[in-house]
Length: 253
Length: 279
Image 1 (tube, rainbow over the protein chains, first blue to last red):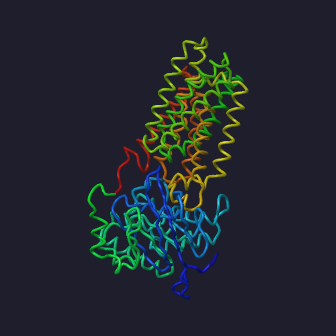
Image 2: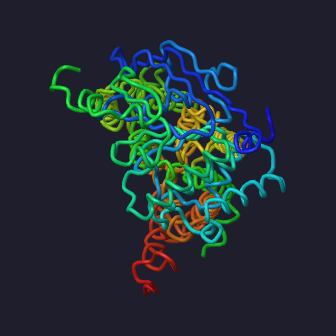
Image 3: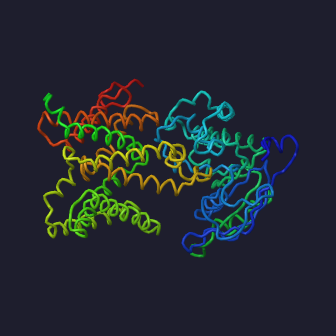
């Protein structure tokens, strides 16, 4: 495991690859994802787009190891990911989180150190420094003593990003990160994701606002249970494809 | 206060049991409050009555051990049954639990007239801490110590799971194992308080202490240790008061804890109803 992987793209131009091949997921015999394949590398921001129920969240969960795959392989930096990888961090949709849980912003970010500390090991200075660094790079140092319910939507999103950074995650899997944010908060989060990708992370996010895709993402996967198209945003978002994906007659799926 | 009473060995045993069960269950109440499942605790505790009745029905006698295993069997059956039914995605777990526990409770009530130990069954409903025998004390101490040990050892994965199980699972926490473990420990904690406060009032011991603390502080760890403190001290005080006031100790424990909760609700420095708002 490389200690300096965060700097890989910015500094020595490695492109660590994530290769997804033929991944299928079903919930109780209902196919949620069929035969998804894509290949991308760190330094990119990948949008998962498609209508409701297209499997965007399921694909994120399948990569994070939260739902079992019926078939297919996921390879990260040349190694098959069996269930979960400590280099992957999953960020849930904001409404799925219990924000009244009694924990401070710092406490939330400290939870990111779990893969390093395991069940029992005490927090070391290195753990504390990693938490400090994560809080600093997401501009949360001043808010670290706050209860998480006292944060704005954008700050809550940043707190979970800081948790992922404290984990030293290389691949960030975000479920609808821009939902419910006002324009300023969206702008700030967009800039942060760009910075995180530039530092060498791979950002994969489900996203429903087609208008903002070109500004916020480098590549896009258009999904409707199956993959309809994958590639650089500029090539993918053709009017015909959007029409086909989002305006299918009811009952055809 | 009646000082004679303090020297009575039954009374001393009752005080020690109240303090210990109060502490162990008060500590555990932190998980119940964080997990927001006070209602399922209530459902599970009601399930223990038919379990005890079944134990008596099958063995023909009421003893500590068959009540203990009957209660545990019924709680596990109904609790895990509700999880299994909810797995089908058709019926939500709270619904499944309500269906199963009321059915079990009704079966217990139907079984009662067929038993000739009805009088003693009352005591399992509301507890009788003055009558605790040595077996009860050891059961309670053993279970309490085990629960405290396990939860303290696994505090980190437990808190990650309770906060956000998906994020925890993506970090490699064995979420399903932890969820079943918390459930199993909850059943154990309920069973351990049977003798002291009975299966109905045990809900109070497993919810109220941490609920009170949650009104006073935002610190997660305070929920557990503060809950234990309130549960332990509150129970001892309640047993002392019950002697003086001439009320049954089981209800007294739950009443004292309830009063503490109301006091915190009204006068908490940060969240009290009667506290002047600063913002």
